[in-house]
Image (cartoon, rainbow, N blue to C red; front, side, top):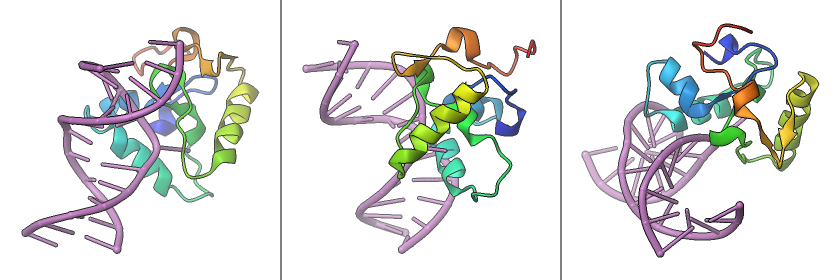
Amino acid sequence: MVEAIPEGRVASYGRVAALAGLPAHARFVGYALGRLPPESAVPWHRVVGSGGRISARNDDHGQWLQRRLLEGEGIEFSAGRIAMDRFGWTGTDENA
DNA sequence: CGAGTGACGGACG
DNA sequence: CCGTCCGCCACTC
């Protein structure tokens, strides 16, 4: 599901979970991403928390890395968060 | 099988 | 707007 997120777009954990058919498994998504091996091709950095906020994880620098990766795709941050109305990917919005 | 945990999310204070 | 709590549910120990 995460791999389906277009470049330059982001989706919330809850959104990914819902698209995967697991409405109440936002946490499960985070858990799954946390288990992803470093060499995984999954664009985990395109998955953010609600409101476009980057969720804290075990590695503090990882958040910075994620932000850097997202900005590299043209995603803009405002007040430490992503403008979901512009970069948010609903899964139904196909105009990538 | 029971208890603890988590890259969440929404409700509350 | 910010910090905290509770609910969620699968996974691990």
